[in-house]
Amino acid sequence: MIATIRYKIFRFLTHLCRLRLRMKGVKVPVSCIINKMPYVRKFRGSCIILGENVTLTSNPRHNPLTEHPVSLRTLTPDACIEMKNNSGMSGSTIICSNKVTIGEYTIIGANTLIYDSDGHTFTPERGWNTPRLRSGRPIYIGNKCFIGTRCIILGGVTIGDCCVISAGTVLTCDVPSGHKAYGNPSIIEPLPKVLGGISERKEKENLADETKRPENTVEDSSEEIVFLETLRELLEIDFVPSMDDVFRKYETWDSVSFLSVVAWLQDDFGYTLTSEQFNNMSTWRDIYQLIKK
Image (tube, rainbow, N blue to C red; front, side, top):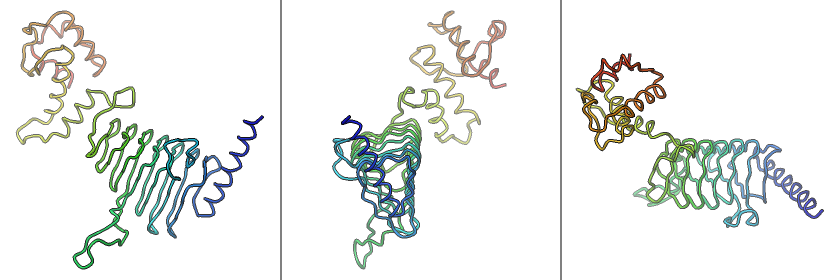
């Protein structure tokens, strides 16, 4: 009985909060959960958009880390804060002079600051002042991200999907999808695959693509590097093989190695290597050229 009464009171207070936000010019669907009224200050002409099932928690009873209400503030007529469907935050602050976008199913921990402007600029005549600015750079946070408590995310940062930003991180650079960031200055590392991270093979492909190729290298040299690195892990050898290595001369080469290579080619490249084909090959380059065809 008491629980039912509390739930009805909570729904009523949430309804009142939604009405007050609409009076301030915020777009709020009926499905939003507003747990205690946030602080909202909206510049004329700007927009604050909340998607379906967005949750804003300003009540420390529901999150003991919350030290102040959720704060949403726009500073220019062109500013836009958008929280997409099923995202949420507790006691955090977004200050926007350009654009801040929060992806679907992304959770933002308590006391995090997201600020897309430099806040102050320096001029020889007046020193530090606040023309406020028009200096904002958009911030984009992808889907299914977790932003820990007391993080600071500054202007121009893009965070990909399925990322984790650890508590207390100061973020001034982009974070690729499937990665985590921690510390100040921030360190970025891939997440385990089970948490949305990319596979080790895909990570090596990305690193190879970002490596600047010398002018005299062949077009597919980065693919060859990934091919050889994967072979090293597959065969559990302590050196990176060469494309012209005669693999049968390896001390560790045996029937298990052969079966491992055949299974890898089938799984990753969809190529079934027959025994007859394999008997006609002697180097890794022979196999590589076959699958490239």
